Amino acid sequence: MSQFRRSVAVVATIAAVVAVPATASAKTSSVSKTSVAAVQTNVANATTATKRLKRYVRLGDTARAQRQLKLARSQSAAASRTARRLANAADTQSEAAAAAGALTIAGSQYDSLLETLTALVDDGPVQTQIAGSIQPTIAGKAQIIAFLTNLLDEVPASVQPILAEIIAALGAGDADEVVNLDNALDTGGLPAAISSIVSECLAMATAAIESAMAMIQSFLPMLPGDVQGPLGGILSQVTGMVGSIVPAVLDMVTGLIDGILGGLPIIGGGSEAGTPDAGGLLGGLFGGDTGGGGIGGGIIGTVMNLVNSVLGGILG
Image (spheres, rainbow, N blue to C red):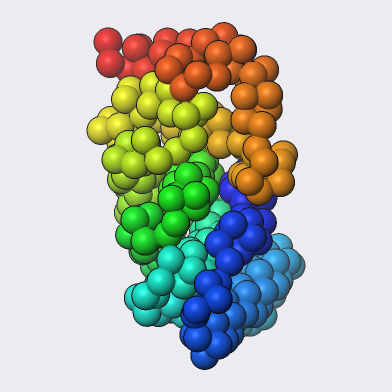
C-alpha cells in the first residue's frame, strides 16, 4: 500500500521517541539491536526475492520463479519469527518499542509479498505454487497485526498513537489483494483447481480486512484526535458488512483510510518526530475541520459523500 510503505520509516521514529533507559543492561540492548538487525536482513533478502519473482514470472522462467518464491516466503517468515520472539521477550517499554519496530518491518514485507502474489496468480508459470502461498501470507500478516495490537499497552504513551497508526495502515490501508484476486477470477481463465483456491483466498483476504477494521475501532481513541472523527465515520458504516461490498468499493473505502493516515506526520513523513503540526498538515484535507469530531468538507467530505451514496445503494 502506497502510504503504508512509507511508514516503514516509523521504525526510526520509534527509536528516536523511545531511548533505551540508562538503567537497562548492555546485554538486553545488544539483544534487541541484534534481533532488529536480523529482521532487517531477512526483509532485505525477501524484498530482493520478491522483485526477482515478478521478473521471472513475466519471463516465463519456471525454475527460477519457484526458487525466488520459496526464498521470499522463507525470509519473510524468518523476519516474522524473530520479531515475534522479540515481542514475547519484551520486559520494558523500550524493548516493546523495539519489538514494534521489528514487527512493522516484517509486516510491511508480508504486505508487499501479498500484493505481489495476488497480482501474479493469473500470470504465467508457477500459478499453483503462487496460489498456495497466498493464504499463509494473509495469515502471517494477520499474526503480525495481532502482535502489534498486543503491544499497544506495553509501549510508552507517547508511542501509542504512532503504533496505532501503523496497525491501522497495515490492516486496512488498502484492498489491493482483494481487487487482484477478484480480477483474477473475473478473467475466467484460471484452471478450476486454482480458481477454487483463489476464491478461498479472496474470502480470507476480505475477512482479514473486516477483522482489522473492527480492531481499529477498539483502539480508535489512541489515534491522533485529528483522524478519530473521519476514521470513526468510515468504520461505523462499513464494519460488519465488508463481505457484502464489491471489491472496487472496498478498495475505495480502504484507499480513503490510507489517504487519511497518509496526511499524518508519522505515516506521511511530513514532520519530524515529536514536532507534528497535525492541524496545519490536515487542515486542507479535512476542509478546515481538524477537531476530530467531524468529517467536514474538503477531499474527505467529498469522498465520504460518495461512500455514503454507494453503501446506501447496497443497503437499500
